[in-house]
Amino acid sequence: MRLLVTLFLALPILMQAQGGRGRGAAARGADQTPAPVVEDGIPVTDPLIIAKCSGCHKKDEKGNLTRISWERTTPEGWQEAIKRMVRLNGLELKPDEARSIVKSLSATHGLAPEEAKPVMYFVEHRIQDEEFPNDTVREACAACHPIARARSWHRSKEEWDLLVNMHRGYFIVSEQSFRGRGAMAAAAGGGRGAAAPPAPGTPPVDARPPSDQAVEYLARDYSLNTAAWAAWRARMRAPKLSGRWLISGYQAGRGKVIGEMAIEPGASEDEFTTNVKLTYLKDGSTATRSGKSVVFTGYSWRGRSTTKNATEPSAQKAGGVPAELRETMWIAPDQNSMEGRWFWGGYEEFGYDVTLHRANDGVTVMGTDLSMIKTGSSAQKIKIYGDNFPKLTTADIDFGTGVTVKRIVEQTAQQAVVELDVDAKAIVGKRDVSIRRAVAPNAIAVFDKIDYIKVSPDTALARLGGVKFPKGYQQFEAIAYNRGPDGKLNTPDDVELGRVDAEWSLEEFYAVFGDDDKEFVGTMGPTGFFTPSAEGPNPKRKFSRNNYGDVWAVATYKGAQDKEGKPLTARSYLVVAIPLYVRWDESEGPK
Image (cartoon, rainbow, N blue to C red; front, side, top):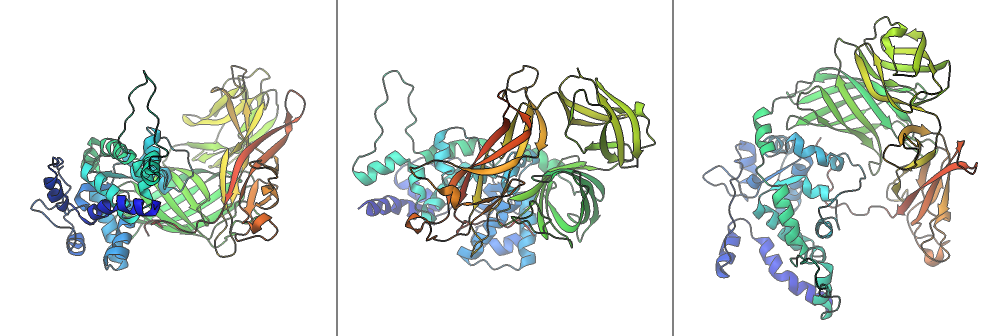
């Protein structure tokens, strides 16, 4: 009965979803609903797009193509739309035609840098806690996918409405989120689950369905025509990126990494070839890579690189060197810096966080091999990394008050090894490191004591695999903190000191009586590298359940003690889930 009710509710919606711009007008006329205000579209002038798309997307006298001219999005968004047209509507494209269309639409119907930056984590494949304007929008959109998926698009109000109808037509289960769980329960169960009347004196509750409230929010904050896009369309220029770039980065499990990227022109003005050399500061090991990239919309770097000395990640070695990785970066409008993520893995779970700056003729300070130095220490050796170092004296190098550079042990044009004395009463906190007029902000921390540690990430997800689907690994780190000037733990002024070597273990997260997930979900390595178990029924578990479950990932650091003289400990909540069996229009990234 409930299934029949659900289908009955969906029938008029399915009928709406089959229509496009124009067909809905007749239906509105029948019920006398006022027609929505039609916004000015963005004309399509590319002959290839017109030839391939105008068979279904009608062209008007202004050069607009229905649907397309009222939407803007990222390169990944346009690639996903093209894939859907191929699968569902019989669009036929050669690979080079598809690439050309993605480039063209990204240039004329893309996002401004200011619009794309807040949702970069989505195309960088980062797991991130998202913020929502309210719980209703969360229910309408994020029940199935990150809200960043919607925020990566800018549409007219009518297009946002049509997107809702498309979901209702293709994904019937979305109706539960769009109408609200209480409304669906009432429709399917004869009134059970209906919301109780509000208490006297409480503010009025917005009774509209979650889908209507979400569309209102998206149409307002992610509209088609914005000042940012208008400004960028005027400013947009071909990327001039050839030359030498300096890389500062971080890889979970391996720490700081620095390097250089040589960028050379490719086949067109927005394509490039690259050669990269990376150095891990912890052990001095190096890796070299070569790759190709495309820059969309004047600032969206999308690339792939390969290496000959690959050592893929495994449970035995955390943070291996991948044979191929993907590069997603945001280029600053002045084209002098980039930032983003280079990633790989079955679920893109491994990666470097990177920042690149264009090399110049002046001195550049990139950072230090140590993340912290203790008060009262003497003859502390530390390496400073950078570019174009001249012949240095101790007077050229500054770590701030209370830290004295005693001597320069050795130096090259890219590295200086110095010896420091740190006053016992030096002020605790982050310090800039400068060489003459060049500065690396917050490059190192001065501390008197490690007061506590945290596990990063504080909540984590791994996935079973290894039989028919890939495993989804997880790398944990223990990060040390100082109490900060106020002397209190876990307050905003606490000083992050950096990664410390800890001992790792798993503990049971007791969700039910007799919980035994710890015995089946996987193993924790000595470096905080978690390897999940295989997917599939396990006859050793009760009811032959799969090896999924939730546990605590626990770090124990014996280099410092708490008030009771015990080693510092911290933990992270780890969910070990089944493989991702279905990926809804998952974009591989432009190639």
